[in-house]
Image (cartoon, rainbow, N blue to C red):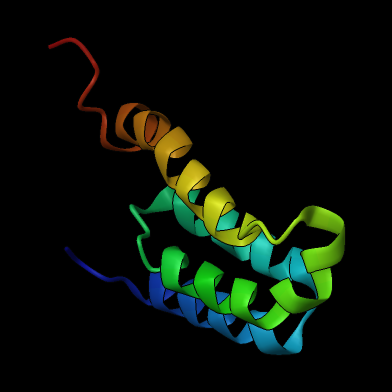
Length: 93
């Protein structure tokens, strides 16, 4: 697993945005990480987001860990797209 500077910067921005920026910055950076990389680091970031914001959202959403579920969905949804378009392994030879 190779880490590029862009991946490290995006992951750090995503982690910092949980605490300092609005929720949509976290979503955009997690989206960018999942589109380009197999970014399992967004799962602990999403857990931190849920632990930080879940108590305030528990009355309206029933206490579901929405950020963690969204992180898993992003990882699963973008895996075939990333494999086909970015690595070219699905292309016929």
